[in-house]
Image (cartoon, rainbow, N blue to C red; front, top):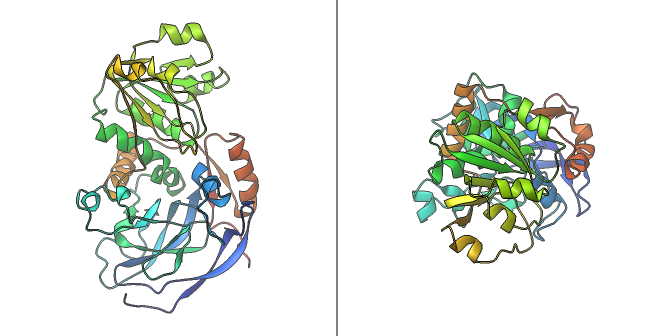
Length: 357
């Protein structure tokens, strides 16, 4: 790779072990390559995946680890071969920062399914350096893996769209579920789920929120605009809703039974799994067979889809519902996220925080 500058020393917040506690960490970024953009980080969302990674829930964590993959910032330097961006541009960086570019998924513009994808953090880049995320003052990323933030979209609002937003948008697009008039449901009303309600409503769908209790009913219907609310622990409500839905987007990131939700789907209905769950799920096959239903999954979205969802939200006037915090509050925010005590996404004001080594 070419170089425009020597390696940069930056300060971030890193997990040093599986406790997941974040503390200041000083490290160096790679030299600016031919197709690299250097990004001054302004904002970074906090995702459930950050918890899984920093606390080694999936058994693949490497430390020290700077998390954060919903990154919005300003381009401050570009490599000589960069054509997409120039200094001063507002850009977003999501979950992946590299791929092989030669496999079938890469050639099909769905590089998130490349077996050699490189994660934004807790991975190793092509130069051998560990990747580090957006809880830091600066990132360097290949231009392919950055997207432009539309002028009509506030940068702090854009951050959750780089993961939560595109994670909802991608399966709706891929499975042909963007036409108005469909009846869909969002299972789980968290960071991903609340964007699911907003995006599906903007597509003209009749949207039901499914939750285990009625404590979020007013929020779902009055604030987010859901058309219906279904309490999954209420057998009568569930029975009344049988065979009524074209799709269910399941955002729940912990073990839960699938059969109650499969019964809600129409013929050819789809249950789309988005939550990262590290234990097997169960269902009996007739629940799928007797209705030609599908249980499938989807993983974030392509760079093309990421740009599309940003532009879709800007056009429709959609915003994520966020709680802004400073870097010195991140550990508490993560604890609150584990308790589902956030409405609905934490966004860290990185540039407005004091980072000290």
